[in-house]
Image (cartoon, rainbow, N blue to C red; front, side):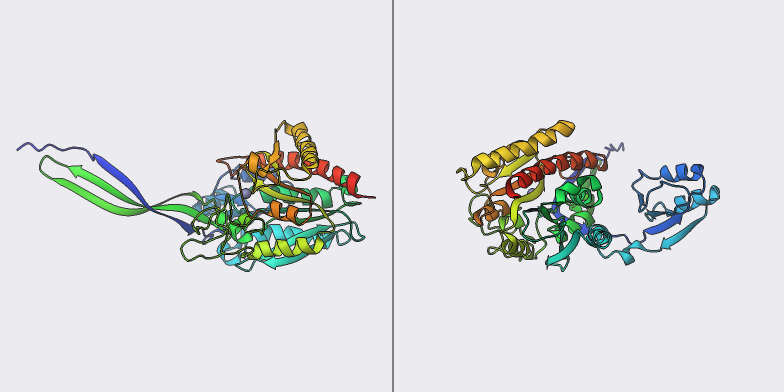
Length: 424
Ligand SMILES: [Zn+2]
């Protein structure tokens, strides 16, 4: 009897559950190579853009050690190449997972501490609180001395997935502290900057993969029978774009910290539902991160003349109010200074920012930090929405430099205004 056979004719993916899997550096090794010739340096550089190789130090000069973290999949290849080319290498870390405390502590806080050590006359770091998971909320204060000077306050990454925000804050810090050409910018004005306000979320968004548990059904039919195979599989496709804090909830985790301030809390543009992106928390200032900002701002509000909340993405420079479309009382000044910021940025790469109120430019939001500081008498308060990149929140490394440089020009314009109007 002739049997008709059909090809596999039915593949159904049903995504059942979206979940997060923590990425691990288990098995990753760090190798150290000392390039002694330009040929060796060139060879090392060929690994630089490969996802399996992470250079912890640059290949810049001969005879300076280069540390390279290599994924378990590429170690055999790396060792084989080194051996074939007769290049000596040592293994400095056998298992990277064992030494990782936290990306933020390792990179960002270590940089701030290094600045405090190298520039003790102008830099102080201050732990203004701890996150829910116990990470330091570190603020860096940059001041040439004296007291009660006009202060520019900036915070970044209250929303964890806005990956470009901390680099912008860190670039500002770097320019203020380490570039002598900018000495005038710390002469009469002080700076207080929190590069990562939501470190738990920031850590989570960099270590957790977004995965779907899928049911795969494969049907295989003959003219007599239908065979159906089912299996569960996990598909992971990218790091999770986590926005909120990591405070555990009964159903879903995390609070939108920028809906958690005491500024017409939990009204328009905020949610009472835990699982929503804009969940306002179970009460005003429920989050340790927002409490830390509240306490710092309240105890320094006589000096803070400008408050900047750094987000992405959108190319907007937004002033209060966020909770209503009503005009703020110092609208003209906010618009004028906003235009100075936007013009300065335009002059660098031609990036066009829109200056508007939060509610009219973006959307309604209640419980935001900008509205809260404005209500507390800090008249110049803005939300910066940095440009998008990649799929939005994840600009590729090549676009970081143009963004931080143009934003820095905007910061210079803001500083000029503060110096002109508040330094007597
Ligand atoms: Zn945001």
